[in-house]
Amino acid sequence: MGRKISYNRQQVLHAVAQTFVQLGYEATSLDDLVQATHLLRGSLYSAFGSKLGMFVAALRQCIQNDKQQPLTIDMI
Image 1 (cartoon, rainbow, N blue to C red):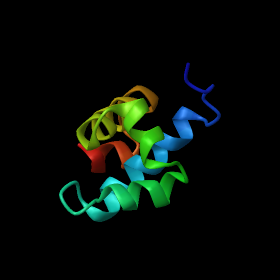
Image 2 (cartoon, rainbow, N blue to C red):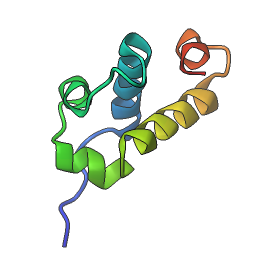
Image 3 (cartoon, one colour):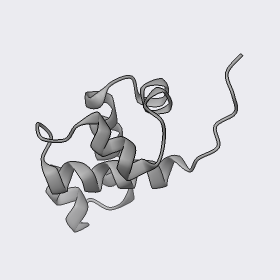
Image 4 (tube, rainbow, N blue to C red):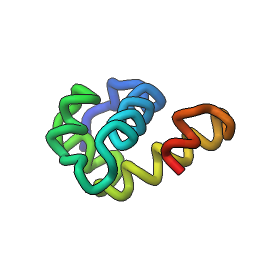
């Protein structure tokens, strides 16, 4: 049985989005995402499956929050 999630998903996805915008998708490494979110690799993979999964989840959250927000526009 897995442990209970102890992080705020919205905060994590915001950090992920900022990292992708800052570095670009291709240049962003898993280590960059670990550093930005303060989560372990296993936690990120468990929650999102892959780097692409993290990007898609962050983009979806940005669009749901505010389509006109600069971070959303930069993610697109």
